[in-house]
Length: 88
Image (cartoon, rainbow, N blue to C red; front, side, top):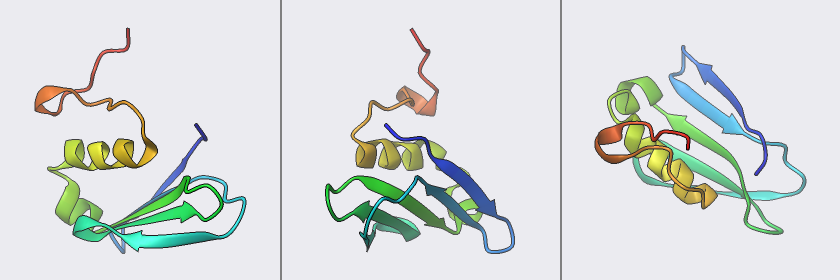
């Protein structure tokens, strides 16, 4: 899995999560103002833009994390009740 850069624009209330883009990509808008960008060649997730991050997602971070891990096809780091899973 690639490393991701994370940036938050407080004035616009937008969270940006991205990795190095190695070719053309396409975007699709998901639920609640999330924009996903995938590389055309292999469908790999290359960025995620979360609009109204603080206003909408501050109390829903577990749900946002679930959406990101689903897009990455990764195990969820969040357990029941929104608690972080322990690293064993």
